[in-house]
Length: 356
Image 1 (cartoon, rainbow, N blue to C red):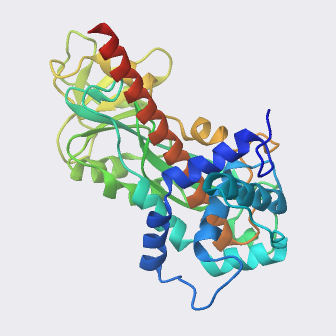
Image 2: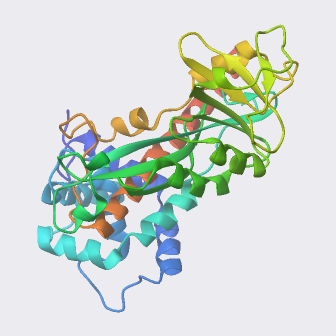
């Protein structure tokens, strides 16, 4: 591929252009001001540049620290038509700059760019007037260091420490609405409870319950959102009124609140939902939408594809930097989804014009 005059591949320069377009300097300056991390003296690596650098780490996951900094500086020079003449800072200087910045600015940045993006006619994003959203979780591997050992290992297993991440995303666009994370010893339902804050009454939450019990179900119902969860063992639920589509009403013994509707699936999995009226959503419609639910593993896999191993591996060597890197990873993922949806919208508009 042709090399721009600033150095580096054109694709790399465009990747940096993507960062500066989606995360303009005005947004970063706002985040820096909110977090109170503006510099009191001039530094070679100011907070704004450090944020761009942490985001770039996620784009170039197969590059080392020095290589990412060179790509970032070359990309910024190419985009703004200026030429930097200084040597990129050392890896130790980069680490100190990241430590000064901390994780909070990246967390704030994530909440500036996160949120649903589907328009009312977006395919696979709505059912019965409800916005389809999915809650899912995964684990990320972190380097084995003394500090990172605090994250623990799943089920006490040997190997590298892991961080458990849980997120809620739109089912059709895969845009992130909220996310949280903790050490591998933190149960997924504990993290899931934190995300109940993002649920709205016009949503239908899809999830695979797994270990998530009916306690979490009841808490989610109290938010006013509608639920569609996959689970095993639902055949043990009391059978109430049946419907022509094969679903039936039930109420687990000892469970307060409104009844739920049970939808048998092939195999050992069942669906349970708060949508108790088949006229609102049939069993077939609900099963089809559940099969299309968003999956966090595959969502983050493309960003971590340059890192070896069966699971995504982060590079940060302390909990604060791990948190910083995770928020940056979620920011870049969200930005890519928003850009993809924007491009799809332009494509639909062009198609509509062509039909006129």
